Image 1 (cartoon, rainbow, N blue to C red):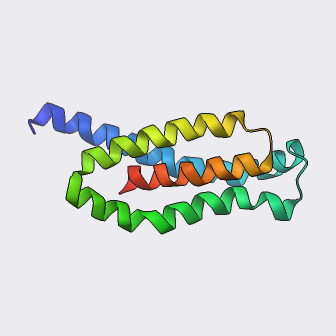
Image 2 (cartoon, rainbow, N blue to C red):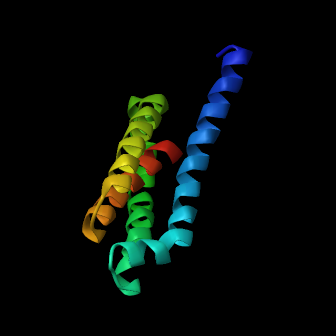
Length: 115
């Protein structure tokens, strides 16, 4: 890849990984507000964070292996699309269960970005 395009590629990958990491931290900070707005107990609301972290942990290595086979660009782009769509689903969710499911999908997208 020529030098100017290489810098753009590095910037795009860095931005995607930053979004994925930042999203995990934001949910931790916003957890009390999420629990209050969705009328959930603190013990139940922790699954919003756990679902995201478990999905990343489970799928990071398999998606990295898939990147070896079909190409890292495809895995990154699919992860970015999945992450973006599931972020909208998180924003539109009206219950704790819907938010938790959307966070699982978002975690798979974040793993695609990071792998």
